[in-house]
Length: 311
Image (cartoon, rainbow, N blue to C red; front, side):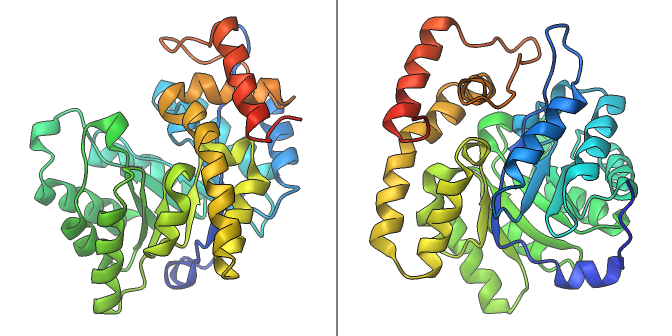
């Protein structure tokens, strides 16, 4: 499903404020992508006041998919995501050329923006200069705005504040999703881009530090937790904007154990198991990931109950 847009206008006006679930890619028992399950999960999430969705992010098991599967997932999601919600496509790759190619294909499908993870295989060579060159080259060739994706837990590469600020000066690089949890660095990026008067937006990459990140300049976030607790993630954001800091703090700390269970503790297998427990399609993970054993699923369920996610 194509989505017509004026690229120049989008590059200058695309606002990211709000909450985004990074959609898991549903597989069946034979390891095949299940488009109908993705549609049903989106139907559920579309009931909430989310700003949009990240498709083919870390929780989408992006690195496990063939290009054909990636395009199928993007096409399926675009057909179900309403026009008033953004679709941010994960189109990064180990090579600059590969990232450019997939970004162009995602744009043709109708992605509103592209999320580009840091290349990492030649980790010792991913200097600030190499990363800046990579992102600028992708941005120069991309028909849609791009965001830098910093995910050091998965890549082993942690892009620092100064190169991010250099990238913020590019007219087609509109933001960064930072999953490092380094709130000091997030605040430093905000300080520098504000000082220069740059229109650059920061998204928190985990709900575990959402409120602290908002307090130092984030405009929203991309959270695994938002797949199973969208209302709670949206409420933290709303409470902050309304100045209801005690309510925001209370909800933030209640979500910390739940968020940890579906991120650092059990990662994608934990998220998919939590979705299954809540009647949302999680399904199997793709090997070499392993689904959670029954004993761990019981522990996860108790965390969901204690956090008020499951009644």
